[in-house]
Length: 444
Image 1: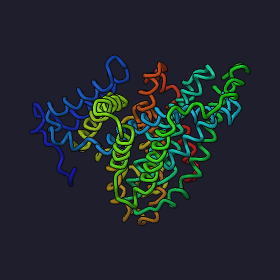
Image 2: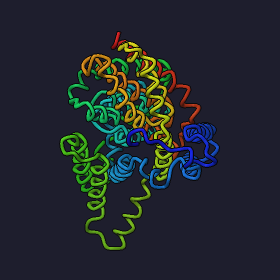
Image 3: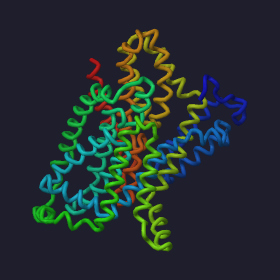
Image 4: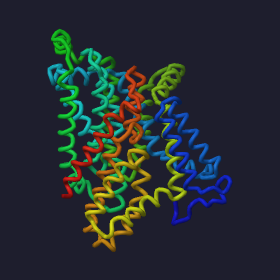
């Protein structure tokens, strides 16, 4: 949205208040999502269309609100990971991981959580879960144990770990660009908080699930005797996939210097992976393989995000998000401590309900306008870090609060281990509140 030019009542059906109409559409869409009676992609697309029918958005502004970089990243990494899986790479990693902890279900829970958190600090969260979740299913199938607690913990670990660095989560990328912060700024300020939060989270899950997860010694012994090398089904494809995968990861790490969006890097990697995968095949084989590759994309998730982005953009276009940001200014009374508390907790709860990217993008100019009256940039830095921690940790608040959450839920559904919206809330709200409480200690 440019300046303060928001949707006028004249543009909305029956001259209704645009802010009210947009908010009602969002609320109804979320209520329907909570019931899980209708496919989430259908709900999101209907909500986006209703935004257009009611005059809150036009088709052009709805498309403008869709974050195509995120969609490109999702599609690209789904393809790359799908092709890599055909080489047997993830089977190899699954066996190696299980053997490192002596096939112990309890040790496996801690190892996979830590690996997820570390990877998420340097890769996109979605990329991380796309790599880790297939490994999790491979291991749990072999040990005949329930993958559900592992998946839930990996969702939390991806969002918490992604908070640690400049490139780990989209809100941090936005903040780093707006404030000219370096990679080391984030590492120094946020990594200690993330480390403590992860250790506490692993301890809680170990108490709730880990100590009860059992498998017999026969299955553990069978896993330990497996030759990891036999799991590689195509060594040539494995080599090609490793080159592409490491190239994509390197591209993500260097993206800020290359000034290329992660979505472009992911799609380029996917294209190269498809080229190498189909290279040398006859025309009919090449076409069949290419068509098969596109079935690896979870199109339900892609269209869900497209619709959701448009719905949230309706709130931005009508000024709802800006109004919410301005409330922070009124409630702080010039106090940095109040601003830190309000920004962290409100951003955490708001990010639980809506995507944190447009919220953070809206908050940035609001907080910048507060700086002159609150001592300048240096004095306001705790508030900026609070925005990062609150919005990123808020991604654990619900199943639709972060891209990684939805991706894991989609993969779990396909594997026969559904993660329900309400079932996830039983863990997500306490984890979100607990993590923000730990983050609050940083500012005391």
